Length: 73
Image (cartoon, rainbow, N blue to C red; front, side, top):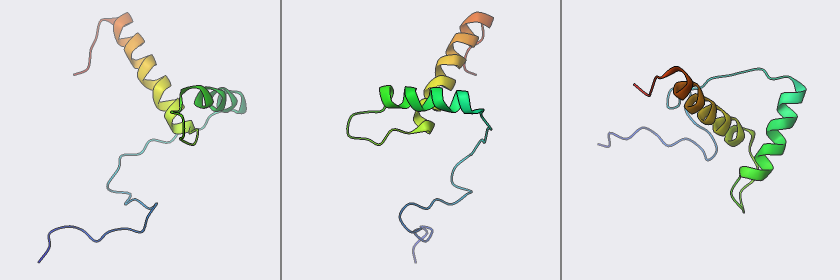
């Protein structure tokens, strides 16, 4: 008897398997993310807003933590 969960079809993920955060962005911010995605997405990979947004968040977190003297806990 296998203890592994049933495999989902390709491209689908269980909602419980990944933590998600949603945000609504205005058109200007979305356009900026799209332009950034073209620059930072690895060659041969489809540009992704999520990659660009993740890079912005991580860069911003590092800057804010440095500014306020806090670090990852």
